[in-house]
Image (cartoon, rainbow, N blue to C red; front, side, top):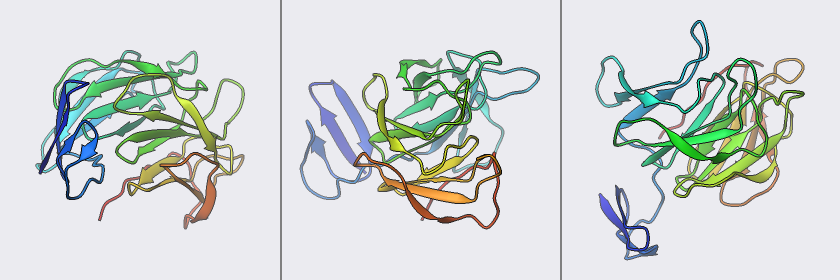
Length: 226
């Protein structure tokens, strides 16, 4: 375990890797860590769109516990994290697409707060991160599917910035990351898509074809691990 201290932000973060003081590594592994011991689930649809955020302790089995609420009731929302802060972006409240990004501090329970806005209001977007930068890719605006990939710096609040484009405009896709590359797979592209795209998260630019899923499909989900 390591200790990150930022005097300017009055912020102390525990993570794996090195000791970092005001952004300068004091030695050891300084790789960002975007995972943790708590898992969050936010938004969705029952008989209507909802704003519920649940949490679980990943290392133990058991039912979820109420964490708090999103600022909006919505479905088709995407989420990513830097290990300390969780972001939820996009979605649809049943009437209009949302461009809202909101955040919570994962180690504490409570309602979400406004983070900023996506460049395009959309439903069915996918999200991943490298521990510092969060990406939101694809989805459908009120008029059409989009190829747009946005990015934000998770540790700070603010509006998203255009990162680049997917190789296909598609909705209900999935995303994951290994901390270097972000993958976006599947989705609805006229017919269902089997395409997997990838980007290098530390640099902006358009996605490149990675390969194909074994089955073309939409509304899939994705995760990564060792």
